[in-house]
Image 1: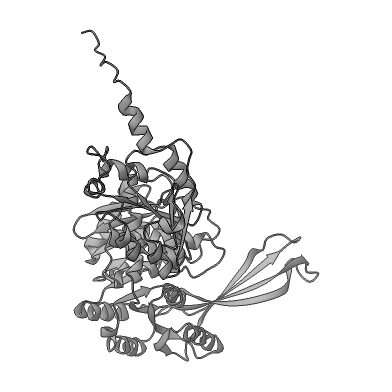
Image 2: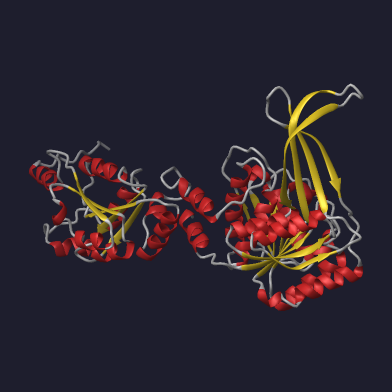
Length: 508
């Protein structure tokens, strides 16, 4: 499955998305809570620094840019300095603000947090001050917003709705937007507000409520996967959705599809430092994947990875494709529920895509080749040595017909290719195994272009097949050592010379 997810990330392209919702400016004031005021029983915070960050729907747009999507922002801000900062920051991230309207009668939503540190310890939030208006935007402003968005719907591969219940996602705006998108065949994914009337999302492609939000919307107390599925079925049926993603924090994501398929996609355990922004990251990831045509279960798997990476950071950060790829590939040598061979033994085209992903992360690819007909300690040591030369080891092994054409012996190979690849894939040092049918690995080398070609045994550099090809594109070639007294030929000869023990038959 990890290879499949890598392929999806590799094929995301640069989809174009529209984000509509409530833009928020998050302000942070850090300081030293040094003493109690003499004027009143309150803590005095001596300010040390301030920081302003995009929040709400603006944060989703920024996260999409981190995922290399083209993004347009739709919403309403006030005519104030905070709106100017939000617009400037979005445009600085190359977000299209052509669908961003101003309302002089509403302030830009600002959440100001005061964080104090006492006795040089970690800062803690002391107070949050919200500057906002929660009433729905006027019918006229809502109409203008929808008109501006629907006039450009054909530009977008998907629409994301980030509803923070600050008035932009009014019933009228949602109704008209979803209807227009449905007519245009543009998917709409909604991250609902915790206090929202979910009927306003009717007709969307999908929703991404968390455990608490889903319980409020359906009346189902979610304690396990069956509860999540039951609540998800309600949402899909009542709202005419294509599917629902019920996010269950550390338990993963429950996916319920309109076709009746239900799946719980667990997430692996992580060190959780801050859950801020995790929901926005899930929405952004699902949005990018939806725009690229990924299916619901794959979307949930990617969202698990991206959301997990988000909570490993303090504060809101942009998770990149490189980080997602690195996280997917990180445990490629560890125990998995997938059979080892299915994870490691790949066709050449698929392996090429996997290596492209690893090179994007700056990894050094090492390749070696051989028949590996009878895996022994010499092979194991040599492959461990090869793996230590880089970040990723590919073993190319001959097919059965290829070995026969080499004319090693009439009864070779001793083990067929399925046995040989399974044994190689079981080694921790080996990341990938690929089979080639030619007598030499030149076609594999030309397709994969390893950074380093190695070969164990008594070869010198110019005796290693393919050396000139590897060096022609700037790669390196290196002979590795040999384990004295251990070779496949000698082992096979000794086995043939040893009389077979008589078959033992137990008495009936």
